[in-house]
Amino acid sequence: MSRTAVMYIEIGCLVCCICGWILICSTLPTEYWNFSEVGDAVLTTVNYYSNLWMDCASDTTGVSDCKYYPSLMALPVFLHVCRALAIGSVILGFWGAVLTFIGMKCTKIGGSELVNARITLAAAFTYMASGVSGMAVYSIWANRIRDEFLDANFKPQKFELGAALYIGWGGSSLVICGGAVLCYFSGREGFSSGSNDTLLQADDYTRARSRGTYVTARTRGTYMLSAYSKPTTAIMPPLFHSGRESKGTRRTQRTYRTRKATASMQFNMDSYV
Picture 1: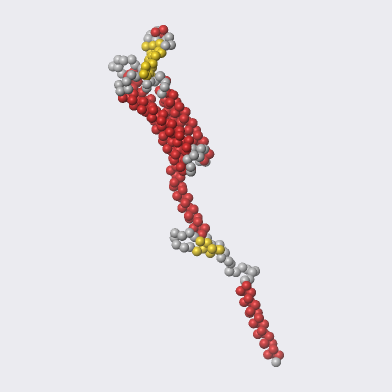
Picture 2 (picture 1 turned 180 degrees about the horizontal axis):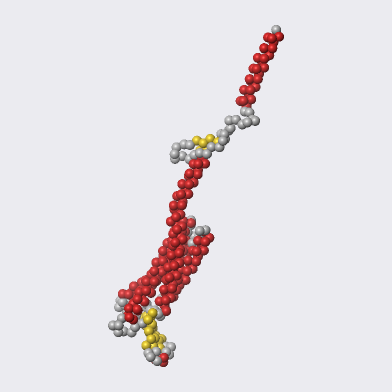
């Protein structure tokens, strides 16, 4: 896949994760994690709803009142766990966005392609941890409401699932999906880049040796040193070219012609005598 396509995929995953993270953050101040209605007539209906931080009540006149939980130490264990997971999900989502901005191909902040891919992979894992934490919060809360609602021996007031849980499930799903896609593409590039660099280095070394040991016809000589030395190529002049004589050849031919001419002259004079 081309670099441009991967860049657009990273941007899409980042937008998806940020939207999911915003939905998770919006559920924390929302009161409607669970709700209940008490009253048979419309004019006497009272609504009870609560979230991680407070209990609220409102009536048909529009008057509502909320009260924070009075004691932190008196809260049940599951509420402490839900608070910790919710805050952890928000913090992990924030750092996931920071790492994604650093490691994306379009920002060019992280450095080389390999470093950017590994930073983006870390951001993907951070986003997935954020989404899993958010999903765990809403699932634990919903499971407790369901158990209390279906329990025939549970005498206090029973509640139903609020709108904040559905918003949180949707946001967590977006974060997990965006982080998973980002993890796939960045992981494939980050883990394969190291092996590809090794193969490319070996291939370059092989090509360099092959270029050093290649001898062209009558013009190139190659001298190889030890196994750890680089190949040295020396350009050597041709020994003979057709249609072109060297100075030594011309001098030898001139000497041979002079001696031949002197010998023939002596032979002619002897014949004349």
